Image (cartoon, rainbow, N blue to C red; front, side, top):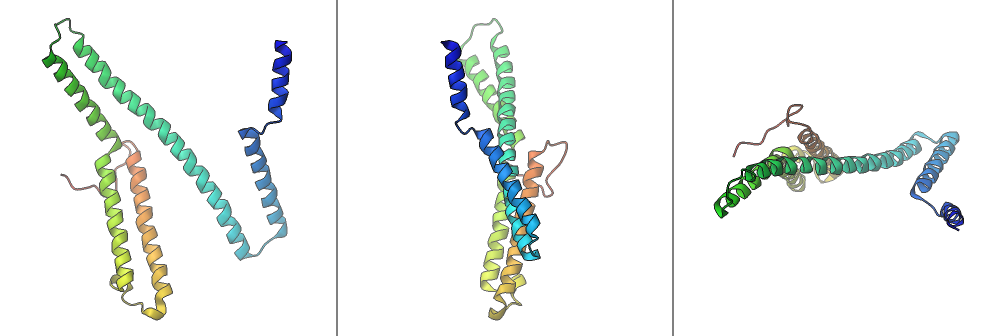
Length: 202
């Protein structure tokens, strides 16, 4: 009876769409679609549109994988830091002496300070805040300049609004790309890379 139940569950499960099966079908459909597009030999403009669609899919996949691995890495790193501080704290309590409220309070404060210092040094919250605010201020400055027609946009009149918006888009993308580079540098170990522009000391 158990064997029959296992066989029936196995064949019943085969009829249900699993995630791997759906992903395989999606990949096959995309390959078939790209093959049809290649055989049709579209024009340059059509190829650019098709490439943009394919790039969008690749970007989403890269971002999803990056978030997954970053989440795993941060979780493990947090466990290491908390475990290291806990080990030191437990060793400090295990001295054979009588525990008083003063010693327990002192040990708890030391543990909290150690964990806070570890998290601050690893995640670099201050640097992230500084660079994000710097990027936000730069984009706000560009927005005000293009709206008021000042700075690099002073030479564009009402008849050249499209050119002003093109320059505005280019400059904003440069600020956003710079922020991405800083973010990547902050995610690297301190001995491998340092941000291109350090925040001022407090």
